[in-house]
Amino acid sequence: MTTTVNPPAAPAGTSPGPAARRARRKAVLHWIAVHSLGIAAALFFVLPFVFVVLTSLMSDQQALTRDLTPNSWHFENYAKVLGTEGFLTWWKNSLLYAGLGTVLVVVSSTPVAYALAKFRFRGRHLSMLLVIAMMMLPPQVVIIPMYLFWAKQMDLSGSLWPLIIPLAFGDAFAIFLLRQFLLTIPDEYVEAARIDGCGEVRTLLRIVLPMAKPGIAAVALFQFFYCWNDYFGPQIYASENPAAWTLSYGLESFKGAHHTDWNLTMAATVLVMAPVILVFFFAQKAFVEGVTLTGVKG
Amino acid sequence: MSTDTLPATEAAAPAASGPGGRNTLRAKRRRNALRTLAFMSPWLIGFGVFFAYPLVSTVYFSLMKYDGLNPPEWRGLGNWEYVFTSFPQFWPALRNTLWLCVVMVSCRVLFGLGIGMLITKIKTGAGIFRTLFYLPFLAPPVAATLAFVFLLNPGTGPVNALLEAAGLSAPAWFTDPAWAKPALTLLAVWGIGDLMVIFMAALLDVPKEQYEAAELDGAGPWQRFRHITLPNISPIVLFAVVTGIIGAMQYYTQPIVASKVASGVMGGSGVTFVPGYPDDSTLTLPQLVYSLGFSQFNYGAACVVALVLFAFSMAFTALLMRRRGGLIGSGD
Image (tube, rainbow over all chains, first blue to last red; front, side, top):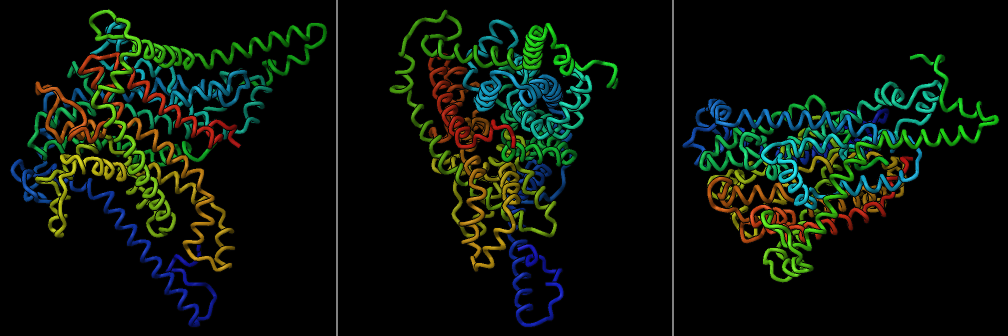
């Protein structure tokens, strides 16, 4: 398998007999087949983005036609979207929710994950089961009491605080993921630190955290994306107050207000996708490692 | 750090175990318990306030008649009876969920596995291919859904333009009850990046020697897949299927946004939006919780649906943990 797929590397050291030539031709054909399939798949994944971007640059009239490419390029569509009332507020709110939420989740989940990974105590197994149960719990299951709590008792509906405050008390997915990562750090490091007289807090901060950086990066990224993409949360708590909307929630109403302007809607769509994709390009490795960790490790 | 100035707390305990040995041991145990409690405290509070309390409260409200204005009134199993026998949208939502579990999940798993296998075979430009395949997974769900409603809209959408140019019949996608779920499936299959990465890692873990031995024995590609690849990656396939089913139970943002945008009924337009457009074909249980609770203010019935959703989710989670003790195993 390994030597036959790469056509530039001919089977080394063999005289060009008919068998070798046949093997080589097979390898070339295999290479062509695999890469053609790859290109076809790539088109499937990329073309939607391409059509969205092309439509976002069309004129209002042309966006109502079946044309695939713009006749003239209207970059001012993006300026129009950014100038729409509320759009920049939604950006600010999304950044607040995602930024503050990420910091809170990392700070509050790390000690919990550390305890679950490195301490031995009664109830550890049960705690882990409950973490997983919470992780799998759809947010809609407890939304009625939660809404009543935040709206009636705390009087916080119409803001994003009902979404941000709970993140200061650990997030089940973050705890799970981080614990899986901390398990991969050998116990010897922790024990050595303890023998050297390091307290648990210092062991965590000085010894474990530096080694857990990739895990923490993955958790932070997932949380940032989760908050940025969250639609249900803002829909429940912020829908009554447009000043508290996030991009993900506001985008839909943007479509409502510009129902025939596909070009502007697609420009807004690009502006919501862009930050996430930019973040990904800067942190690709951490992200992919994190996804792998959810499925394979443990 | 001052390694040799501080006496090690743990190491000190046995040294002091002379006359007061038992006391120090007990003190140490207590200190350890307090330490564990301190480290666990954020989650313990979160668990109580944002999981245990609201869950109990959901059960309570499922037995009450409550609209948020008048005080709750005892209704017994009345809400349960209403949801199961007279609420017209409950069974369509369950049927849709079943459809999503069967069709959407298998499409995603098969396609994800195919793409995972393809990416392990690509030798030239593998990094670029991998990034391109992964990218759609990152598109925010609302934005991706909006994009697909546009791409698949029957009037001006590029997909139907291409289909018709190729001489094929063009479905009405999100506005046709028969095609709305397939359109959502297409969207779900587009965002396959997570499964691709998981399968890729699993495929690369299959021992090479097994393939080489099989090839020497004259096994063809299908036999190698059937007898070597599949047995090796089957835990991951199971993981993908079960998490896919859990995801299908919770499917919310994409169908509600798609039905809102395709039906043209938006927030603030004065018309109450009823999820499920067209003809309840995109309804799922979480959407029922939303519409019962937040547009019909029937909190009791909303809590009944929420508990049904809870029961299904926990059943599949239990299955996942039983079959893959690994999820909580000690990591070796």
